Image (cartoon, rainbow, N blue to C red):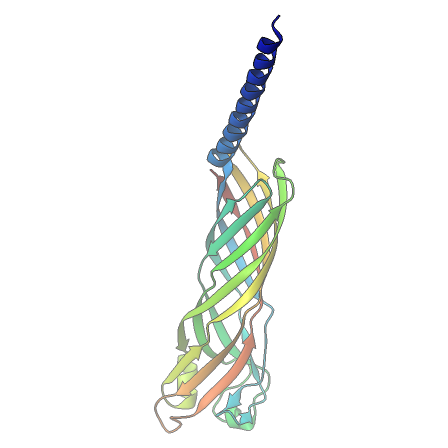
Length: 246
């Protein structure tokens, strides 16, 4: 057989093999994207603040002995994850929760005389904490798939409302303002397949939320007085739910 012909055939075969390999890789990548790149979850969350605070301060000068505490809550939440590869993904969560802020500890005579004592509910606030985490999924092909994640959080306090108890104690209206803040978030979780597309999910997050609140009396004999407090909310968020891959 002609050597020139054989050489030409070998080169042609190499090109065909390279083209076939390229098409195979492209098809595999296309199938992976079309099949399971997105994960949508609906979870029920238990929000448990690991909270602490400074003592409340009246008019930026006098500490009032007591601090504040933030209560727990149970809320629904929806989140979505986009898988950048079989191991790496980005999760975005969205949800709102309402929390009561109450006096914690023994107040000085100034507040105690007004009836503001341990356990007095001062205000409630609606919290929107959009959070984005960068995740690593350890066993992407398994039925049981654990993951870890870390990212950033922005907490917006949408509506702060003083209680009737607080307004009665201070003898007038109260305007409450809570500072919106940035923080970090870390998480650990697992997915467990119950069908080809549906799975169960367990997720635990810790979110750093350090904010400050100001209660300003707007009317009555004590108008102009302001109560300030710095609060580390720092909630643990435990979620259980169901997810769908598509």
